Image (cartoon, rainbow, N blue to C red):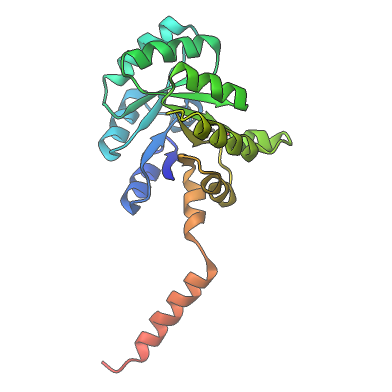
Length: 214
Ligand code: G3P
């Protein structure tokens, strides 16, 4: 399973990239707004750090305008993937962009039916939002399991990005389900590193090393 980082924060992206654990980046308008910086500047910096797919979201809601936005953004780098909302207008745009070889990531997906439609329209990626489903009392990961089964059955080429990840268990469940990608917030990646036995073991090794005659 590939790991993308779900953030527009340059320090977080730089750190995770230096750790060698990320394959790409996903952003959305909320994450961009959080940085309170010029959009193009942020995007240029992300592109200079990460050599992998970088999802940037359109803010138009009409297909023609989405396509125009997408073409402009895709000129920034061949790594740019255009995030398109899961609407009829959005899928119209996906079909057009697919024909122009521009990669897309259909976002705000909350059901298996939505994912099937996005795949049929030719989306490169589809992003089910797991945490937000869990938040309203649904089993978010179940739609990922169903999507994997269906996509495999019909050999759909669309890759599943598990998004809206809230904790490390979501990452394990996404991997067990066979998702292609998990897009993970920085704080969850940090949590994936830590184990008290690693800390205790390292402390012991370091203190024992001091006892070695030198
Ligand atoms: O980037 C899309 C998704 O990961 C958003 O997550 O935490 O706002 O539900 P969240």
